[in-house]
Length: 382
Image 1 (cartoon, one colour):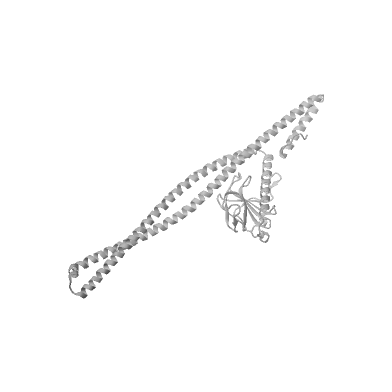
Image 2 (cartoon, helix red, strand yellow):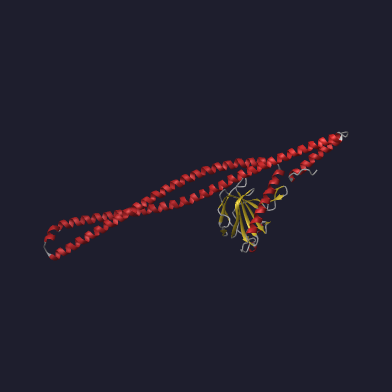
């Protein structure tokens, strides 16, 4: 019966259905006419057509849900990046405020000293004027004494003028510092309000994501559906790796000299080992490492980012090319800190761990590929 085509994971069930129905017809009603058999066959075809339509609808629904999941997780990642940026800015603002406050206190002390000096000069000038009877000195008297007193008064006047000028400059600088302090305080208040709003948006997006993940899990009800989805996800990953390998010819020397010496991308227990069963005949092509939400994910070796996007089944993924056909892949991330084309160093933080791709717990999916072929990461890591 080749007049219809179905996905592989439904074919056996449908063929069994057809076979059983035809055998039952043959055994129970041996005297049926050719016309009756034809009617039965039409009924079988109609049922298979109905099942096929149902499958198509189910797949469309799953695709729609996966699209929604992508939107939620990309939005969460963006909000995570913005909150992280806010936190860095707030740290800088706090440092600026601390420095400005210290400078303001120092200027206040300088201002007080300058005011005390000016007051003392004015007081000295006044007392000296009275004791030496300045009007009489101006009118005449001992020329030598008059000259000394005149020079002393000139010195006092100059010192007073300099003190007034210094005090004025200090006051101007102090006003500028106070203005900057006010601006930084306003900036801090704005950043804090922005951060709070983004946190609220993040909580909302995480709640929406949780609902979408539940719907996806409900949509993939049986092992055959799960197996088909895993196969499609794996094929998508292979396609992206092949495209990245084709468009990037790296001059780097690869990982061959570092087998068994590479650092771990993060520290955590192994949830799934390479080669173990994922579902049916699908096995894990990498390892899944337990992680804390937002934990730093580090590059295991220097290289160039050749893929930094959301990929169905793997969430937010970073693919790093190390040359000679060697690549490392980091999936399930909450936030990507690098973009396509970035050059990274060994040990550099490239992402924050999460549970994207519809995972139910924070973890990191890690692969090593040589000429697009998956390797056991455990034999490469320290």
